[in-house]
Every structure is written in structure tokens, then in C-alpha cells.
Image 1 (cartoon, rainbow, N blue to C red):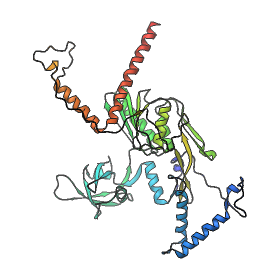
Image 2 (image 1 turned 135 degrees about the horizontal axis):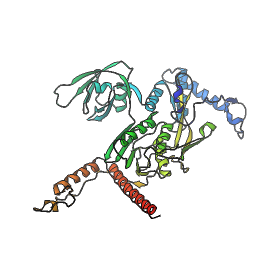
Image 3 (image 1 turned 30 degrees about the horizontal axis):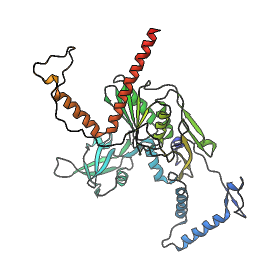
Image 4 (image 1 turned 90 degrees about the vertical axis):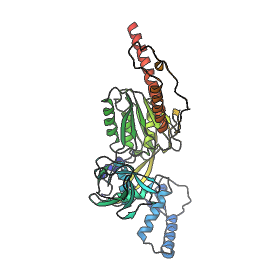
Length: 449
């Protein structure tokens, strides 16, 4: 079967359903529509379609077979609905499945464009690219003898993918080598990681979700456990910037990971199967640690569901810039063994009933992505720099001008690389200090009672 059973929950909230057959209506097509006539196709409009079809078939400058013309008609019908409804042939579905499962047959290289050439950003762990020794900064000059100069990223990715077990030869330019190097790789199944995590500072975690795939919920839970093993989690930054969305169910699972209870999202459409709601199960994996969610104009769909749910429940501070504003749900509906359509079937709403369609999520704190530079200031002499100064009475480490200057440079490096993360970390530290103060007050009150 072209559409596997597993895809019934991928794109939207509704399960796959067959569209009802529609009858033809004879007679006056201008009469007021009734419930019965609304379920029928107007015969006059079908006659007009047939006339246009025949004119193209007979008079177009090149001969086009009937099957192709009908496929064009279907594509045009879906394109006229909204930007997210579309017709899926086998290739389109394969691409969709690769995005939602995070698996495809390829080389395992993250690439970008530099000086009009495809350049390796990083080889993914445990992939043909990593095993063959490709390095960040390698410039791909040719792929199986064909020049890669001027090739778009989309075309480059398409060329590097292929059947599992097939081989491809990359001709690369590498720093330190005078001549190009040929490296032959055998394509294999590549698993794209949608979740990355690390500690930014002692006790403060960073979790990045690039898109919502089938396993993203499990990956987030695993990442949180790894962060907690490094010590008490005082705060967490959830980075959803430039996350285009993905699987609805995964976004629910991610929001659920940080909520004890309550509605996460609900959907409303014309059919009963499109009207659904999703709620969180008991258990906050971070045990209530302060959170900041980063969003921007590239955060869409499933990313907006998570941000909206955590914002409505006041579970996290949302920072950054306004999100994209895609508040619709798409369902993949099989037409036959080779074809399917992706159809917009519902709108989704945040727990407080907000529709973000064509509006987006507004951050609690607006922080634009900018380049920050510190005003120049010469290092000033401190007490620790004075000759014969007294030591710290508590045995603490002395901090002179040179030490403080190094700390400033470290902060400048942070702000220069990503000021939004820097500001989010500052907010987390402030929230943590405030929560400690509140905890202390409650303990003193309890002791006084």
C-alpha cells in the first residue's frame, strides 16, 4: 500500500478516511442549494470542465495524454484551496515520510552553500559520511563526476539521496590539500536527529527541537534525563526557532513533558473526526524547573502548539519574535495505491481558545536577534591587583582585572553568537533566584507556625 498505516497520525489530527462519492445534479444549477444538492456535483460545471479538457487535448502545441491532464487538474484544484493542501505523487510522499520519520537513504551530511559551492557543515554521527572521514568545511566540487557549482541546496540533497546500498563518489576540496580528493560512499539509512541538548551553565539546560518527527516526544524525554544526570536542573531553554512543525501528536507529547495536567490543544473542522482535543497526563519531567521557550518567525505549526500551550498554562516564558502563524491541520488521504492528497481538515486552538492562524504566537518578552558588541573600556585596577593587598577572609579566589576581563570576553562571545539564548539564560537565572526566595519565605512561615 502506498500510504502505510503508520501515517494515519502523521500530518493531522484526523485519521485517514475515504472521501464520499458524489452524484451529478441535473437541471437548474442556480437554485438555492439544499443539503441534498450540496452533496452533488453541478453537471453544467462538469460540462465546462470537459470542454476545456478537450480544447487542451486537441489544440495544445504539444500532445499531452489524458492521465497527465487529469493529474494537472487535481493539482490545480488542491492548489486553489490554501497553501498547505497539495497533491502527493509517490516522490512527494516519500519526501513527506522522510521529514516526518526522520529516516531516509543517503550519506548523512548537513550541507550549506559557500562561494556558490555545496559545503559540508557537519557529517552526522554513525553515517556513511562520518565513517568515510568527511569533515566540516569540505567543499563538494563534483558528485559522481557532475559539477556541483551553482547547484541549489534542494537539488544537492536530492542528488545525494538514493537507494540504500548504492554508491556515489564525492570530489572534495579540503583545507591543507593541494589537489581534490575523491571519496566513495555507500548510501545507508540515515536517522536525522530532531532533538539536541547540552548544558549552557551549571544547572541550566538547553534543548533544541529542529522539527517534530514521530519519535521527537521520546527523544525529548531522553534528553531531559541526560541533562538531569549532570546535576540538579535549575532551568531549561526550549529552542523552537526556525522549527517548521511536523507531527501533531509529537507536539502534544513534548508539551505534555512539561505539564502536570490540562488541555494542550484542540482542533475543529467540518467532520466529526476532525474535532479532537488532547490533554496532558500527570508528570512534569523537569519537576517544575523554570523554562524559557524561544520562538521566531520561522516557528510554525507544531512548534506554535507547544509554545502556545506552555504560554497559556504559564509554564514557561516565551521569548523571541512573533511566530509564523500556521494554525491549520493537514490530513493525508489515500486516493489509490500510487496517489494521495494532503488536505487541510481543521484549525487548532491553544488551551485558552486562541487561534494562531495567520496571526502567530506573541512572545511574553520580545527579543530580536541582533549582533551585540560591548563598549570599549580599558581594564581597571581592582583591590586584588594592588601590591600588598589583604587576602580574602573566607579563603575565596581572588579576581583581578585580568580575570574579570576574561569573563567579559566570554560574555561577549556568548552575546555575539546568539544574543537571544544569552538573554533567555539571564531570565532563567532570575526566575531561579526568585523561586529560591519564595521557597525560603514559605519555609520560614512554616517554621513560625
